[in-house]
Amino acid sequence: MPHSRATGTVADPTLALDGAVLRLSGPVTLNTVAPLLVRGRGLLPQLPEEATLDLSGVTRIDSAGVAMLVELWRQRERQGTRLGFAAIPAELKPFLQLYALEPVFGLPASD
Image (cartoon, rainbow, N blue to C red):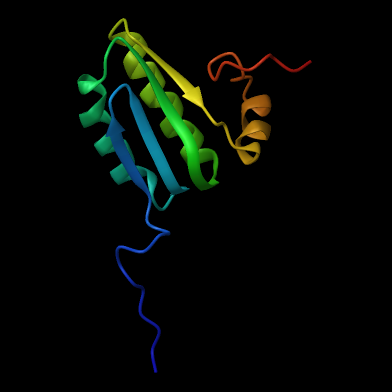
């Protein structure tokens, strides 16, 4: 019997607005960032001046996911507003060190 991919599963990524918080969950990878970025760009204008992107639900992230997070942060900066990050997964920290992005994510810079 051929294997079929279920839709709407827990593994599907989501980006949801919850007051001043964007909640990102699921895998944030090359295969999922395009629709997440489109959704994020649509939600950013709805956020207050100070907002947070909660990463506690992220199950997997790669360099494409990092690029998407930085793009959302940059868009807010260009608008003169702020986007902070909460619940940064351990899997993301090596990317932040490699690309010297710790200050963007509110972490102390590594040596």
